[in-house]
Image (cartoon, rainbow, N blue to C red; front, side, top):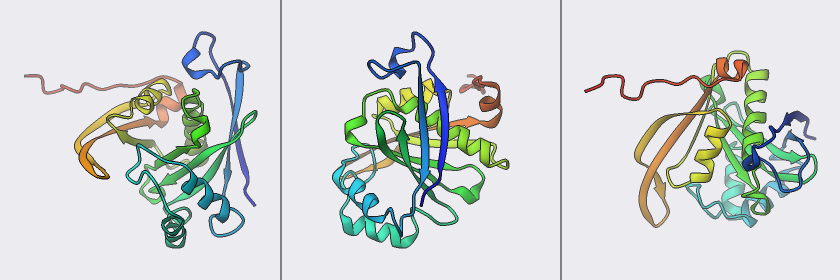
Length: 208
């Protein structure tokens, strides 16, 4: 059985881009740890195969591919841990995986169910994820994420959640049947999570 990690957020008045139409002033996002080889296996295979993920390296997955990933430990091992994303009003809205847990600076894989995309849920999910990482992993000082350069909605979500763009890897993201696009990396530091601020740096620190 999974165990819940619940974090409640108060949305600021006027931040309409982060609000669901008709929503109240707060929302609870919970991460429920899933068991990929036990009770949650069928649900995981169903979720991964009935949704398309246009901004992931593999946009469509087969049950065989998901099964192989489960067997390889891609959803739960020393480097990876996976969760269902639960919304207090909408129910289960997606999947969240922490990656590179042994490196000290974890990455994540976020996949929303198709029915819940474009509804302003990304910001509270990222904030809940940062609360989980920094709140339960005292040795972690930074939390990282990457997306394709053309995933504009996700790139804006990073910025609204207080993350900072840290790298732009040209032609770093393979595309099925097409030319590679840039991979854009974002990060959030523990000090910014603690203060609620956003520290920046000078991209052109060498000047001319």
